[in-house]
Length: 185
Image (cartoon, rainbow, N blue to C red; front, side):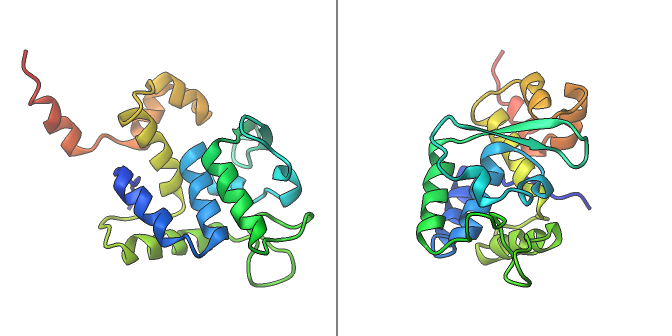
């Protein structure tokens, strides 16, 4: 069964509130829903990749799956969470940004992130099937539905070969289909 995006801005805000005492997890969630990259690529980041960045700074990342270069642009939300994380005894300069609590300087695994995302949804009674990929899908869904970003732009951001792949990837919710039936012509 495919994982779903978080489609409600309220749910996203509530997850951030839930994580306010867990700086690493808050940064992971915030970056995931703000940049639309695969979690496996986020997990390769080191503190040195993001230290001293400002709003608008760019961070180049090579995608594991495609081998293509992608970019993270630091926004205010990401910068705020990063500063909070570092101020609360985050990892050292040469450590992975999303360090596992197991082992010496090892990043979280995608499997563990899936478990975390499921825990967050369950803690807030958000029904559905969620996992690590829900963060990337949430970015796409929110950008398209709440900000009106065209499929073509999302497709380019995700490094998909066409907008039709992006449409299939995100999926169209039944509520969206029924909503258009309320349009008066």
